[in-house]
Image 1 (cartoon, rainbow over the protein chains, first blue to last red):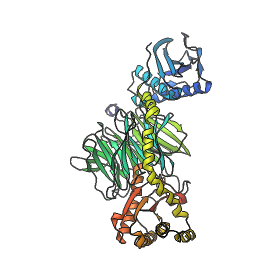
Image 2 (cartoon, each protein chain N blue to C red):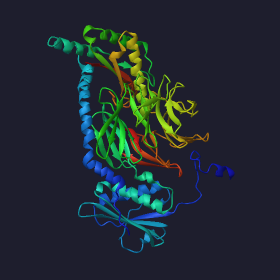
Image 3 (cartoon, each protein chain N blue to C red):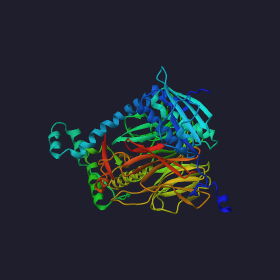
Image 4 (cartoon, helix red, strand yellow):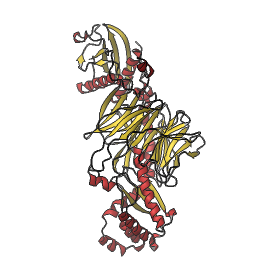
Length: 408
Length: 182
């Protein structure tokens, strides 16, 4: 008992069994406009979002209903909650969605939504799930409404940078032509991003204001240049660059345009992540294989963070937590397995977050509630969402080329 | 019931899609034009036979000789997850250094392009590609090539010459290419 209380809030402890059962919810479609294909697509999106909330036991049957009926469908009488929605197309082709949430035949919550075009329907679905979660008094899932930015290689030396929702079902190409990689949000508001252009004489870091489309050049380096992390206030960047042929981590001050070298090891130091104001976590080959290290910026003290696995190749940090990609097989001649692991600087536990396939690009949500990642398994790609608190993983299939890098 | 319009995320996306996305695309296209010229040479270096070189050398001696050197520059391959140079690859680099000392080549610079197979993560792979290019650079400098003539870029796994999921294919992608620059 004491043990469970002590570690109740530690996300590296895996909750194997939950005693309380989740309330049931059914979804009733009362749409009057749009064809069956679109209605079903919207329904599936709602079901997926409700599942990701992890607070309901979601009934997956597509049921029809009349929006103004005061009773829920007979089949749904035993459900704790019933969500009824109606899709309507207005004169300007905008998509209007009305919802009602029933609890014991009473409407306990209702709201209307509107987006200018039906092809961004998934944002309405995410907003509905967000609102229901708020109504149920659960910790915020504001990350559902954030944008994902990612790069994909379309052919050798040519890529696209794409904006998407968290399920990557909405995709909008914002940059194409040339080889542009490693997009990274420049601020909390997601109004600008950094990326690496490999199309000029030297690798160059650029900044795009997505409100007006302006592109600014930040700096160039021989060899490689990647923006690995942006500080909470957006004023500092952790860059991996190699002005003298040696990949090291640098702290770049956005206001003064000056940078300071933070690592000096002669092998590989990459993937710097801020951990608070005084520490960075990074990947280094200083033991002869890639592994996670931390470095205090005031004392320069370097510490090995993981004593498990022989190839820990990428990481993302939130608070005291670090999620990292561990290559669990190092086979030159066959498919390799990459799994995600979670550690905390406060405990010695390692929590394994995935079990099969190639799991890469882990990125914490800004509030640390969820982790986004890309999974490749048996020739299929998917974007995954891990809800740490609920010990649940959700996968959304991807039907386009391979993701090179992503940020959330 | 209150009615709201979803503004935040969606509006930002739509505004962007409506008017501003063109700018960066145009910008990068323009910046890319120089690169596009050098890219055209890349496949040529792999496929141009010595017969073509001979025919062309009678028409334009200066540019052709540069082309000829480019066509003779080797590809340096690396072992899985490694950036050290093996003895057989050292011989290739020595030969490349000799070509770099030819009279016509002395005014030319070289760009070393480091590449990786599909295994490994995003940033670490880029660093591995760079360390490969840097290993070749050091070997060239040791062979007497001026370091100021050499620039480097890593493409990680974004510039594969082979996209099948086989060990032969992965081995072909763990490489450094030489690109002559004017």
